[in-house]
Length: 261
Image (cartoon, rainbow, N blue to C red; front, side, top):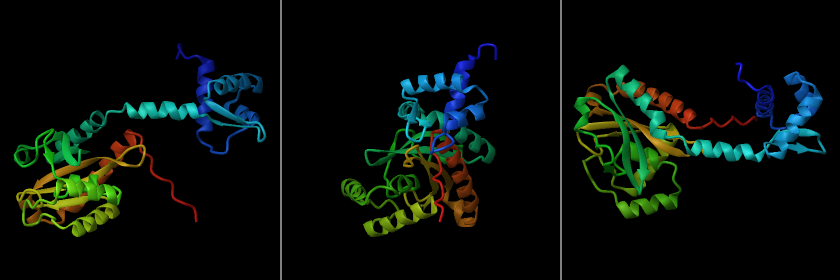
C-alpha cells in the first residue's frame, strides 16, 4: 500500500462510481460518495475530461464515462487468449469427471479443435488438434453456426455440402436448419453417432464480449454409454453450460439485462 498514489486512486474511484450509473453524477454527488473536497475532485475530473476518460454535460452538470475507456476496453478484450482462459477449465473438468473435453472454433467453414483434455478411451475417436471436421455433422459445428445469418449459412453449406458420414448424419438443409433452431433455443447440441458411429458429442456455445458465439465447449462420450443411459446427458449438458458461462465471463461476455415490462 505504500506505493499507492492517492490522486490516482481517487481517479479510479471516480471511474468506478461513474460506471455504476448511465445518467451520470454531479460534482457534488461524486464528492459525497468519495469523501473528498469538491475543489480536489474538480481537478481530477478536469484531468480525466482532458484525456477523454469522462464527459461533462454542461446543461445537466453531470459527468459520465468517456469514449476513451471503450477504446481501451476493446483493446484489452482483443488481447485475451481464449485458449489460455479455457484450458484450466478443461483440465479441471477432465480431472474431476474422468471425461474428455474440447475447445473448438469455426475456421473457413469448418470446425477446428484448438485445445483438449481427454481420456485414453476417447483419444482415438475425436479429431486431433488442428484437424478439420464438418459443421453439419458435429455438435461443435452445429453450435458454432447456430447464430449465423441465413445467407451465410447457405453459403457454407453450398461450399462444404452435407456429406453423409453415418446413418444418423443430417443430409437435408431443411432438417439442418430445424436442428440449428433447436440448438439456438436450448443452448446446446447433441450429435450422437452423427459423425462417427461410436461417438456421442455434446457442445455448448461460449459467447464473447460482442455476445457472439466465439467457440464451442464440447465433451465426448462413447456412443455405447448413451445407449445404456440417456439421462446421463442432462447432467453433463448442465455442467457444460455452467463452465461455458464462466469462460465467457472471463473473456468479457456480459449477460443481457432483462427488459422491464
